[in-house]
Image (cartoon, rainbow, N blue to C red):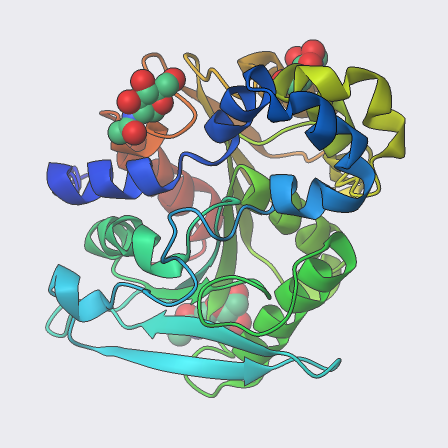
Length: 312
Ligand SMILES: *[C@@H]1O[C@H](CO)[C@@H](O)[C@H](O)[C@H]1NC(C)=O
Ligand SMILES: *[C@@H]1O[C@H](CO)[C@@H](O)[C@H](O)[C@H]1NC(C)=O
Ligand SMILES: CC(=O)N[C@H]1CO[C@H](CO)[C@@H](O)[C@@H]1O
């Protein structure tokens, strides 16, 4: 019953984690001579800081294929949004020969890299849960068109959910939304706006923040006084409490050096869901919690006990 999932291959996790170094680049920039210029330009340039989609440098052209990770049954998709963008996405089916769960996990990635860098995570989810995984690449990332911003990413998330709701293979499955870091903010917003009629059966949040505005002063010190100019809000602390009837798993890396784990505890405490589960990764940093022992066990237990609990 409670088989423990095999950990994803270490090499792929570490290359993934390296590519997910996102916010870590900011203090480096801040301590260089560029800091003053950069903070002056913050208002205009904040999208480059908040959505570093060119890290690593080839992230807009080189999206690793699931095939490189031994996944054979998948579709590489381009999905149109109502406002004219085309989003790259991957739909992964669970390996044949295993009992397929009535479950699709919708993955929202962190703010650097692209979905290809997260395929090892999707694979670990499939190995553990025998589910479909749908990986969305936000506008402006990887092979998606457009430029990222808050309004756009919200449209992208809704587009992905609507797609899963009309695709014959997934429309009758349970959908669990899973977001890491920035993806957590995207996930919270999507679930809060789609919680009627049992649209969504679960939400998994990893190392996400209270709001972008609260993040800026510590992650980008010279911009401390400019946080008010921040036009990307992602106010998860205000939106999360609107979710009442969806079970939520909080995965908090206690060694997170980018988003202090107290952001996660605070989110947990404002959360109004009747079913909220708190799990920590004692040695998990911002970029590597996913590789910590227990990570996929926590997800497996959550799915079994809170999401699939009506299944015989
Ligand atoms: C799968 O889950 C959905 C949503 O909860 C439910 O409506 C459907 O009946 C389930 N299907 C099976 C085969 O259990
Ligand atoms: C949340 O994280 C931000 C940015 O890292 C930090 O400045 C703030 O103090 C944190 N808030 C809490 C309640 O942990
Ligand atoms: C694998 C990897 O890139 N890990 C990095 C995560 O972030 C810390 C900094 O807090 C680095 O020391 C690790 O190398």
